[in-house]
Amino acid sequence: MISIEHISQSLHEALSASLNSTLVLLIEMVIAGVLVIALFAVLGLVLVFMERKVSAYIQIRLGPNRVGYQGFAQTAADTLKLLIKEGLTPDGADKFLFNLAPLVVMVVAMLIMAPIAFTKGFQLWDINIGVLYVSAVSSISVIGILMAGWASNNKYSMLGAMRSGAQIVSYELSAGLSVITIVILVGSLSINDIIASQQNGWWIFKGHIPVMISFIIFVIAVTAETNRAPFDLAEAESELTAGFHTEYSGMRFAFFFLAEYVNIFVVCAIGATLFFGGWMPFHIGSWEAFNHVMDFIPGIVWFFGKIFSLIFLIMWFRWTFPRLRIDQLLNLEWKYLLPIAMFNLLLTTLMAITGFYFK
Amino acid sequence: MFIVDYIKTVYSTCKSLLSGMRLTGYYFFHHKEIITQQYPDVRLVMAERFRGEVVMTHDEKNEHRCTGCTACELACPNATIKIVTKQELQPDGKKKKALDTFVYHLELCTMCNLCIMACPTDAIKMAQTYEHSVFDRNQLTKKLNAPGSKLMEGVE
Image 1 (tube, each protein chain N blue to C red):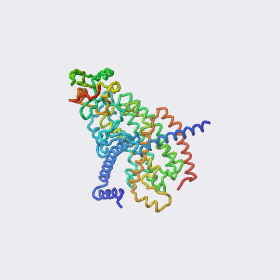
Image 2 (spheres, chains in turn yellow, red):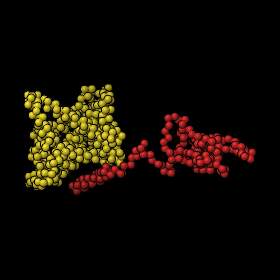
Image 3 (tube, rainbow over the protein chains, first blue to last red):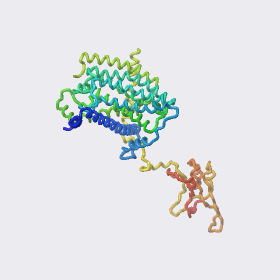
């Protein structure tokens, strides 16, 4: 059976047969970089189109349906338009920081891609603290947003960036606590260990109520962390025009736009890995025959299926709920999510000690 | 009790959020609810009561029912209608006032329907058309009586 693991391994062997190890590493890094950038480009096109269609159907509209079959070429046409537009830098802006900010946001989104396991043996960087790495790096993106808001020399941008700062700093906590729930149950921070522990069932089923609560908290927190509606105070079109990227145009704006969707993809990938077993097919305990049938569907299909289901959930939130006010936002985090997450953590710890979960 | 209120708040919030998601989820999966009309492909037929523009009815012998009484012109609140009359020689030798040109300014019309209500002979009515865009404003000034048409027999 051909699998992605075999392809990557045979490529590695073919390269190391003729070249020395430094060169092999270099070439492999270039290939990985190109693959990540290609994935980003495809994700940008697919997710924007998906968002527009989902929003249209939820609002009883049709959405884009003129360019290409059923509007499939719409996002490609939009990207083309953004590429040829002028990237304006405002007069009073801090030019260096203004131009750096979109790159920071993009690079952070790229960095989180490193420890994600796409399928068995297909991972850019297998580190033993994968979850910690992800939660540490993902909070850097707020620096890019603050940079953009501050450097723009615009009051809307400034307000949006400040709101975004307050928001990400507070929601980081409950996202972290809900991730720790799974770490406690698995006993490891490595992404591969977490996936391997779900061989006999995903944590959302094995860990029953406490894991479900932490999954709900995780979804709410990452929606806030990626600045998506109903937590899109950093953008808030109706109040702050476009928040931190008011002054951006052309390709630099496209970077922010792309980074938003890549961030959604990445947090959904993390959510799928932690709660739904990553690339692990749907297994039920010791039902050997059932598990074997499920194994016929490749891991990459499972992984992307789970990610896109989660992305759909987050889009569903966006087009259903109205935006929260800043005080409501902070109330929700500090008075509801954080205490519940802490209590839930205690519950999970007790559960892990007593072994009161499906093994 | 504080803790009871707290749990109640969480419960009612979750419930209301879920009921909202249920409705939007229903719309997402039921495309028959979509109300968008794809206009150039699908052209709606408007209801009878829709007021698109004033037209004059002509029968198959190219005869209209307008006597040129100018009741519509007087009823019009913003001078949309201008009626030009002429003296027509009757077969019995008498002269009689008759309609020469019924000028209608669509660009001034507010579709108030007062001219149609004022007309004693039901000569004009509202049409259900709605594609009125033209490249020149002059094209909106219309002559409603068809060329060569004359008054219908028996309409006074």
